[in-house]
Image (spheres, rainbow over the protein chains, first blue to last red):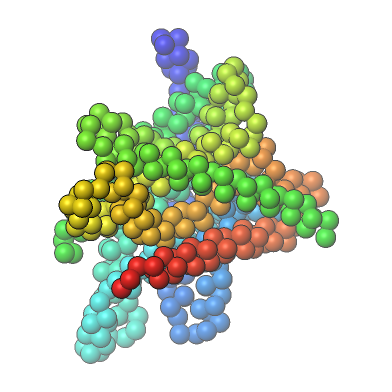
Length: 219
Length: 212
């Protein structure tokens, strides 16, 4: 047992470097993906039919394709057209696209949960369509969308482990390379799993507490 | 055209992996759900912890632990079996949560009436509560199964020759451009359609059985 702890202690800094990369990719993907999701959510509800259909297709393809295939596309596929992205850029591009597609549905559900009377009242006091969104619908709709968005963020953090496939030195790649150097896969993979759990378990519990809280207010 | 046939060779693996891991996981999930609701506090805490842990560690990590971790020095499982086990464990945790939610949707009066009729605990579940639970769980289970279909792509990383594996092989070998990825994406979407259709059809049939 103490021998395993020693092994863990020796390689923990390497895994923590990987964890930092995972967290950076998560943050960048969410920072780009959630605004994209908002745009897609509004486009899916737009008046213009071509815009609506284009957004719908983008959302369905983004949600229907495995994140791993999206990653292979941004890293290997785009390279064959001459657009070579670094593994970091490819990871962020793929996961941001994935985030955009999924969060657009979450945000749309949030916007739809805002009672109709709210927009009617905004129209009645003479708000333009833009102001109606900005001051009335979005503040209420986005608040409803916060818990599921946080839950989704945890999933995106977990998906960064797929970037192992495109040689991004994140947590999973680091664990695997330590494993193949030392031939001790089991302890290092378990340590990687524990690091994921150490972040995701508290985050999951916090999100479900927040959900209960908001539930109490809306009821 | 040649690329298409190679892509098609991945389809049976993707379908087989989705089906086997879902069925195994749905079964294990039933047990896990029973433990979560058991009257023993120790069992309940263990099951809750297991569900949380299984869902908090990404699928890739589970698959690698089973394939490489157990594989080096313990038992080397074939990649398909390793992927199936890993995905089934994750499915079990998620299905346990889905069952639990569905059970709370079955009216308490149903259990009370079954007790009043003198049914044994086994028959109470098998004949009264279970069928209703399954009907309520179905839509969430279908959503999860579609997610699982996409998660099976992770198995390509340990060498299962599924759709994602073939796309990757094609992309690295021939630089066949972006078209192959679009086809793969459409293929995954096409594979998810029967799951959605099956769920809708079963839901309608089960609804028809409920006299209301």
